[in-house]
Image (cartoon, rainbow, N blue to C red):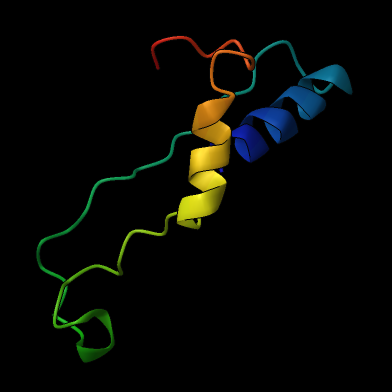
Length: 70
């Protein structure tokens, strides 16, 4: 999702609305959230991951993408 933010913030800069564009995203988690049954009695929803076969396909081409040791 961060690519979407970067793209849109860049696009705003390219349209001449200003030299600097900043976005502040508070991605911290509040431990005061109530536990929810639909999340397995956790306070936060489960982490979303790609399908195992998709992840394996990307990892196999990781160096080709120029991502090195990330």
